[in-house]
Image 1: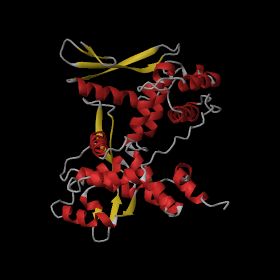
Image 2 (image 1 turned 90 degrees about the vertical axis):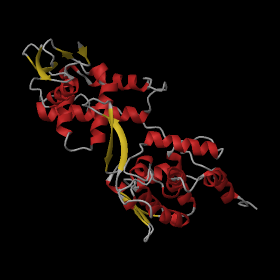
Image 3 (image 1 turned 180 degrees about the vertical axis):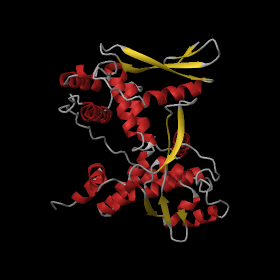
Image 4 (image 1 turned 180 degrees about the horizontal axis):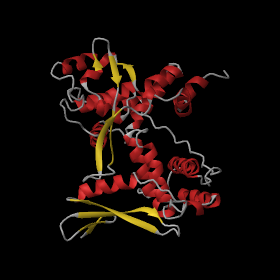
Length: 365
């Protein structure tokens, strides 16, 4: 019985996984096998064998080169980044370029491939965003640079043109919608209280899901952001995905945020019945993942009779409110945990139409 990619069950009851272990001088593949008593163990062994096999022939394929490049980064990047590399390659590269020999890939071929990506439909039916295509191409630049430094193969990606990333409109809640959300929120419900906390502090959804009560200092009115929670693809194992709790997006995302004064009393009351290691949202040692928390958010918007916007709009509303209130951009950038002030400027330095009208009122009177 065959399952997955080159994994099958032998007559003796064991599972066997086959993989390309090298190339002959004529470029033909040489195969090796791993064996295990279960499919999941065999799958893990097969992945490990693929990643730890460094190609030594210039007739290696792009798939083989990627495995070598991935191995070189395994212990230098976050687990979520590592998983994202695999996902990008499997979704957008393996089926198109994976089987080509590295030496046969040209600059023109890669630029044509980039154009093709821009017209590729995503799983949701729309064409891929320029940002996604950028991520794929930047990864390929690094993969082919690895071929040059490790194997002496000239990189065809040096002059690879990156598409210009489009600027998406930032969606925010207006003052009336904010008031309706606040009125509809049950302050005794930690899930709904957490939504207000994101509105008042600019937390990302993965960050609020990872907050525990030890991160909430009532006495000093400070919220400490130290982790983020996410579900990622599982390269090996019985499940396709897994939950991970890691440090936030960047070093500057590790930050302390003043708690809103209008929430201190309720937070103080709630903390009395919680352990310091309990998660804020669940009030226990179990987690709620972002996808599930999204449902609570949608239900609150519906109860408040507010049109749906992405959860990230809470963060955008906090940012634009801070800027419109005159808070300097550097402070806003630190509160949001952006990697640089430039990111904050590019995303949030705009004003809404009502504010523009207010500022222009009486200009020529």
